[in-house]
Image (cartoon, rainbow, N blue to C red):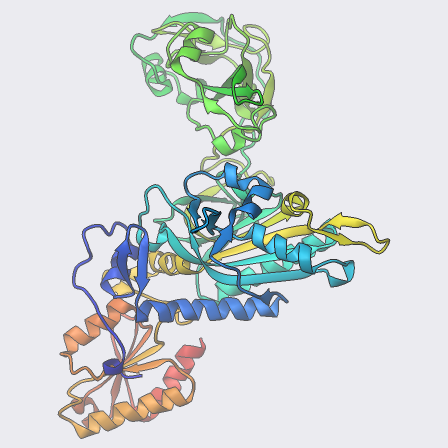
Length: 581
């Protein structure tokens, strides 16, 4: 490929609305062009990267035994109504009507469609297991699209869906996809972690996220350097930091804390460690009748240590809160505690409140909490003596760096990551709802066990850049780069020798199947080098008239601090070695 035949469009400055590094560099390098909020054109340079990613995904999915098909972007509402997701999903689900006023959606995912295919086509146990996948455009109507393609509204994903006879077989399908994902991200040249994760709105049981490690990542990944334990912070188990509850050593006292409504302020005033305080959070659950009217409200008091934060995902797994909860209103708080927020606590409650203590709080002694009276807190509070034992003890908090690992091996560390893949074991959530049954050996209908497996194809580009860049631009892993090698001839229009050497090297590399580009645009060396450093091509060869006379070319890897002189006869072998590494 010659640069004059391709389309190259770079910018010296990023647009003002570009926030994160990947967004800035993709715009500057001419990989994407903004069309609307969260909607981008993928320009030729960016599309080449996407196709590289897709090819690796296809090869590994096929190797794992998955079969490719293609499901539509536009899907009828009836399928989503069968599973109840038509009503459950909020405004992020883009709903449209056709000319006959029939309801459709622009798909954000395809569980319903693939389950419809399975219930029609997979009728016998002899046809199982099966795994179908597609690479398709998706749309989620994000309230605030940002960060370029990292949180866009339109994006490309690979989705796979497995169908099995039983839980054991479904586990094997899950493991095969997990292994395939590891091979995919290994081949892409990305540093990543596979972490245990919450199943979220898709539902199901077993779940892992594949996170590309990057300081700018939105997700916090918890792991033990001393073991294989790794989990998203939403799911990471927080063990009690106190092995048992100590005996009381203090009397409970009502202590004035004027204007001190936070645990940190109270601890500072009293000269106590923040870890001696207890934070109160008030939730509410509503029971409704068939008409949707609230018939009963239950108020919950969740207690975490003052230096810890509530994990709302974990709270949603507590018995009684699983159906959904909300934070209590100020009126509800006043009615149950007789006090405004900031001074709440579990002692002396006059109205029924469900008290749930975090594991660490349940083992605390002589702690400080709100007195349910403005400008006052209680010190020296102890379970059993000053207040009843909590109704429930549960893991409610986010882990923090240095916590004991729940597997008993070492302490936890936290790093940032960008989710680029997710594997779920769904069970029969969708097959049961849509009557996707097969006939077993005895001719009895049974719901198929399902798994779903997603990879954010376009999101991978942004994640790779967040992980691999410097002040000059993008540094693509070779497997993802739009071109593996760029040949930069200096004075090609003035020197027949330079032109011939550049063309010969180009043709030899192309003959070996290398994605090589010859920059024949006639740009000045500084501008030419800046373009390819910005775009992030991993390997560059510079050919000049002076270099040829001295019997050398210049090779420079994108991460190299300086160029290396190489005899022309040896440059091909050098590049072959670099590309094979």
